[in-house]
Length: 594
Image (cartoon, rainbow, N blue to C red):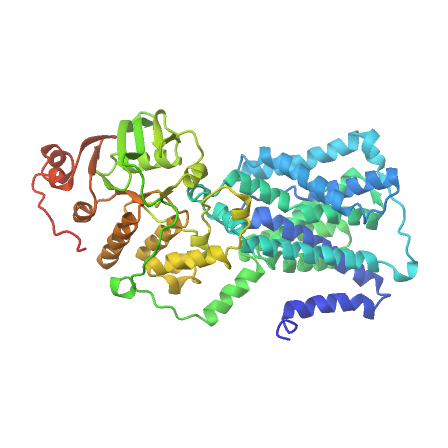
């Protein structure tokens, strides 16, 4: 009964009942079914452009491909276009995957321009390929066979069903690790790759998923129109309308594109009827785009939600001291309990230049399995750059990187993550638009499709994420936005995020930087606990007492290469290290308590 009382369910029931109660109101039915069609396209567009952040201005090309598929096959075989709808969807997906493997190599303005070019070039092909498409003369389909007494009822319910299917499909995607991966790409594509998200696969899959229902809708739309021509099927105005609907309602949300579609479609009809025709509709669309960008950049739904949160704030306590973090035990599953002694990571002659600046200069580094190795040195000595070379964020100009007996410097970042290489960042790079739980569940420990389609906010993956949050003491913040946490808490969430990948080696880039001393002590406990279970660490840190207490061995970097290496007792008195980094007046500070 509670579900039946849901406003969304009541609205759907009202839309189903309306044409049955008023079966002869033809014009309102057409307005609504066109709103359903626009909502279907906007929800699909939202998968690639709202979730993943790749804005397409040529998305109506896939509606046209679905229409032409049904039109061509239907005209030559006599099959009912309703039966050809799945074929239209498959053709649209095939075209999207083929095009996406090329166009998704770009981002930002180039991607937008290429999608427009894709739409216009398809229009040109359809115009000039007379043998297949009948050129500019178009294709005429057979009229519907049902009685005129029921008017457009079959089309009405077909488009309503397609809209509901697209909403359900989009909601399912958003609840999976595939969905969290897409949002991660939108927020920070480099960080997404670092946590094992195969960004290439995700983007191409999202592009294909965003057009399947639209391609099916194109087949039904062709039957509704009974006539197709290239100009109408591949219209740039259609793409602009899709984008406008998503922007008005709220890009990146589930229901925003639906709300926006109804607003835009009704406004379009009003402009056409009362404003003097199609030209006035174009003017309305242009003005609406300007107004949305200036005054509602987030869209209607996010703006209303933000207003509601301001009026009804949730009380959340933020603390940044060790007493608020209850220590939990965690069993790390991936690393083997015993492994042969030897190097887990080897960097051989790595070099990285930025113009005339040599950031890493023929550096060698060895990290033994089971160790907590420190990498220290002055700012600008190349430590973080070396991390970037190891994880694949940058490509080395020379040298090799070997991990767990395998050369990895030619692998993309996500494959290095799947091999067991995890990394935190000097300045935390959480996905601020996600909740803490979604941040922790986003990483991908492997490349299996089954893992990619696993549930993100429920099921086994979510249970593991909550276990990791409990381990770092932040389970009670699971449903809070990641950006609302303190800086130290974000550091701990980022560590939990890396642990979700079940890493063999974790690279910690200044984990204590800007963090309350109480949390630094807790962080040291966590590192020791994980290390006792077989996780190896490479730590870049300027907190020398922490380094000397926690790490062994210690490697000192200066001018892009190591200048000293050894146990803390040797490094703290090495004259070369004192000259280059610590200074001769450096005294042995009190170590971080165990």
